[in-house]
Length: 412
Ligand SMILES: Cc1ncc(COP(=O)(O)O)c(C=O)c1O
Image 1: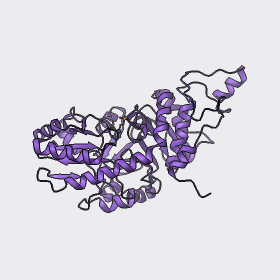
Image 2: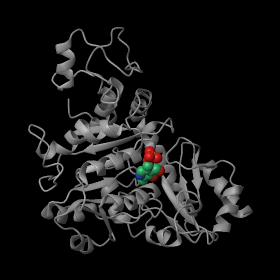
Image 3: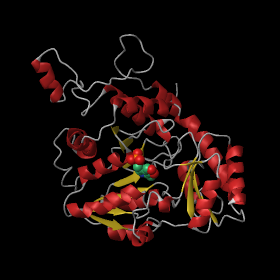
Image 4: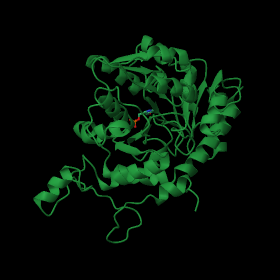
């Protein structure tokens, strides 16, 4: 048989040990501790020699199974699962940053990521904001103390796409790892490793959870980064040194010390979510594409943000990176905050809620919610506009979703 394709790989990744009852899906191991027959075997497990679980803050059968399925889906060397997308971001930077180091990043970031980056100043870590659309600017900003370049694959809510393969080329030459939050376009539509990404951060709360079943996040290590100049990762001992040193550091120290682990229940539901990801994504992204096209040029819409539109400056990049499916998020600019509020209040099918890629279609005004604690200067830096509504397209009938927007635009 040829190399199995996406859904087959994910569904066929089963837990290595057979279940006593032959359960077709791994039962949920909701326990905190695992017992051992004698002192030597628990000591060996603590030394990591037997591959056995000791305590669910360190590892757990359901979490391991979810990590293996996510590896099969992403093609990555290893995946570390955590309690949320933000836990994945914070654990990554707690593992690699140190006093005097810097992160070169686009300022167009999800609100909590922006806010976390600002808080790193208190730990002596500088964040250098650059225009991710300007490769020369990135090249000029990185130096010997840059622990990573960071960006979002499609910026939320700006809907920009950076030329990741071009950025990766200059970062490779300079020995700087590229870490990208790929939450907006899932693995079935985007091959991150081919785009040159070393480490992906994904909020599994979104597409993967299978309908907003709980928060989760993963750090996806493609094993391609050069960590040799990173003072913290260079200290990781053999045999994990080298390309695996990030994962070794995370598993051996950062994740267990910070304790923001994924629960067994979340791992079980997110594993099921991964099994149905492709079919849900195909439907959601097809609907998003149809809706973005339908409302472009509408007299009450100043601008539609969606990289798949022919008029988008990111169309060519989006087609080549995302096989023409840049995700299930789009935005409408409606002229003013008041117009956005009137429009949102007139919607009947779309739900006013903050999340992305639930089975239910969601709408939000980012400036007054996700970014409500930002000062005007922070909003300016982060590129947050007051007249923008963000849509996350779910699984309802696309015709009903379109009619609802049409009616709300008319009535608002
Ligand atoms: C692009 C992006 N990254 C990260 C996060 C954070 O994920 P979580 O809410 O699971 O912590 C979000 C949440 O909306 C997001 O949109």
